[in-house]
Image (tube, rainbow, N blue to C red; front, side, top):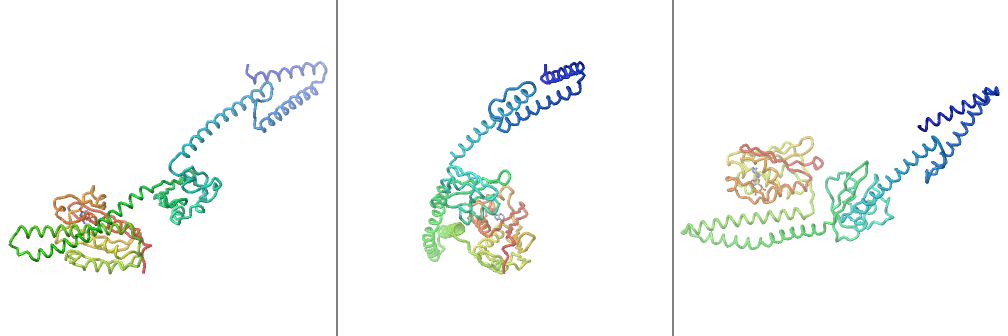
Length: 425
Ligand code: ADP
């Protein structure tokens, strides 16, 4: 029999007894009233006991009772027990997660909505010098490097930021912020000291070797010129060899110059001045020497007189490289169009040629160092494979980007897009 049935049967029995006694004594209604009052009082007492038990957290075994109330106590007790078990399991999982993040070699800090520290692992406490009492403190008050503060405020966390450890400035950290959940962010920092050291060594090595090669190259070139002057043309072998040697020394000199320029772009501080780009482009187009005496092939259209903030020398190198390429990689009688104009989002220099074009698969690679497209015709064209790497670097230093569109057999268009905020003068 169900508990409810038992409960109903008891009430029916009580009612029957009241009816019988009431019938005999003629006091049915008062007795019924007393019965109802008794039942009501009993239920109120039970509710009050239950409220007392639950208000103390329902801890321990429930009070002894019978009927439906025992059933209610039992269900609540079971739910609480299950909840306790689940809580314990969850706590264990959180503990395991904390232990694993504590053991991570990379620093991890959980940041709240207002950049306050919610939690930090052991590595974070070590590299950032955080104390347990720093919990709740705003991180910009503890890590005060301007680059970091700018990165934190920017809310653009696609890139990472490099900074020295506030505890030991010999340690270089790469810091990245990963947003998650509702307004929370995870700050991750990795020790990249060794990586940066190797990178610096590579840069230093390239810079030193290029620099050291300059003097012997100049000496060789000087002697070669003297020998060529002395050559009476009697031996075609000698004359040919001198020409080959001169060509190769020049190539090597270009290589060294380009490598030194790239090193400078990687290491030197950016200079900022207001550059008269229209005047610069006019000058570059006129400079027959730099552009292989073919400036008449260039059609320059200046649709805007905009000047931009930047480094004139660097911009000159980039534009010269692009124009040089357009001339080099297109037929000698074809036209190269250079256009300086402004569109909605940027100020653009577009250089268009009618050359052989670049295959789709090669386009993403042409800006890599030393990458040259290996076609029969292009192989004959002199080059170092560093020109577009220089262009890319220069543009990066000017918050600009290079866009390349090209079609094989038709020609290419290289466009440099400068942000409008760089317009000056
Ligand atoms: P390079 O010294 O070889 O010209 P760059 O870095 O300037 O080096 O260019 C890389 C490669 O991209 C070139 O070797 C060439 O294959 C290709 N390239 C560059 N500009 C053009 C162009 N205007 N038309 C066709 N191919 C080009």
